[in-house]
Image (cartoon, rainbow, N blue to C red; front, top):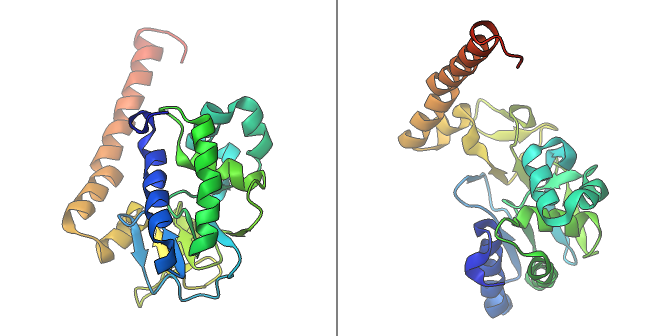
Length: 231
């Protein structure tokens, strides 16, 4: 496939791979992560990482229970593929992996080969990433749940607590080195983000949410009681 035909989510990992392939000898460990929505509480490498495995990080829900992941997996691997890996936790592509540079390069080569095999304009990196991990296509993987390890994927409010000292803790009380998707929450954005993001979150959590809820209820009322049609 042509690069311009790939989904932007998949394309970013190709850029990561090409850079690492050219410069792997300059690094001991590497970390592929979405920096825009990741908060670093300390050095992400300041953790007893294995020296022979690639570390990946799970979210707190199963693939089958998250509609975006269901759609992404089915689009690439069909219903059979979803059945095969759907009972597993989502491996987040926003905190793609961390590990020894050469091991990460090995995994990225497996990933790129698979991506090129299944690539379509709608194929996302998260679908391919999860399929490889949950089918053991690359055996040298160390997977961390959402409440352990150096990285926290804050997919839901219940996955973290905010201490009075401003430190974000996981559900076990540990302090993750990095928190991904922190900017989904007003309580965290208020402390760590810029005013434009705070305003955007306040709008989404407040007036915008009230507006969309009211619009939906009004549509239901019109359909059921004025047009007298079933929902």
